[in-house]
Length: 362
Image 1 (cartoon, one colour):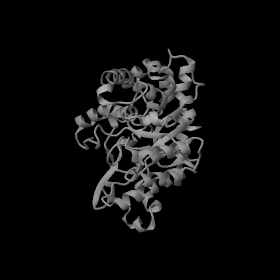
Image 2: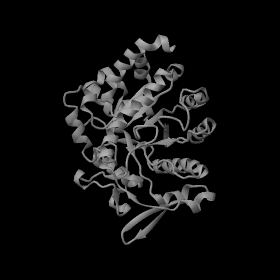
Image 3: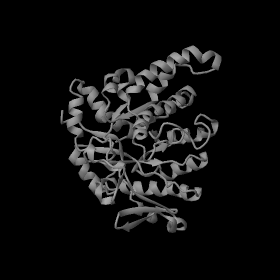
Image 4: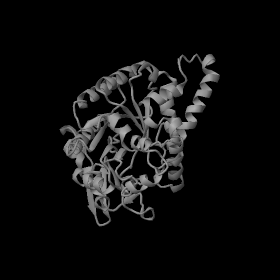
């Protein structure tokens, strides 16, 4: 089975704190994060906050018993998170042909002007990262979603770059709901430029709730964050967004897939029971739109693979999640060979590469 191509539909970058000074507009560069060197290690300093270097998002190659929330120095984790040449080497080690790249994202400043500028700064950095080999490094732009006109303008600004192939939106906009009419230009623009809308897992409520020090809460939150993806994608179906825009493609990223089979069944059951008194005007059960327009990524999910034909085998995409703590790197080839032993060659090729290749035009 080693001849089957591996394409990761969800991998990550971890831009170093020092990159902001190079990519933010000039008026904000003196407020960019800096790295402070101390006898205790490196610290990021931003807007008066001094924080250790985050490590849990870059545990690739480490044993689980060696995982830690922070690291003393940036060079204690694999440089493939920010060095594109090192990243290509790590792809070769893992037997992966290409990766769709998420991660990074905007700065969390109290000044919206700086936060908004950081969206574009990150997107430009990611584009440069991917330009090292745009056939193997496929960037996903992070989209600001406070003002629809601004969101559309950022898509238009970036759409000509071959290094970027889609836009990341939150499970919910900054306020209100995605099905409000004011967001119609977003869906229309994504369709026009040929980009899918990607919704990446993150917390279980409308505000991410992962405690930074509570290990129990962290583990529970990771589990519940997967189920929270159901709220985002089913809202797009039940509200009629997917019906109104049949060419819109949506990606549920890092949410795993085992819950989807149940969600399709139960959502249709609820719709059949309640569509009349709620005035729901869908012409088909909600699962019809989900199966037609929503792709989903997973790392390790034997339950989901067992249900692949009910979910829709043409909408499932494997991912390595490099360099996060759930990554299959550097054993992706070995692990996928084991998981797909009893799965047909056709299904294997679709899930491990071809679905992703088709979605992103690789």
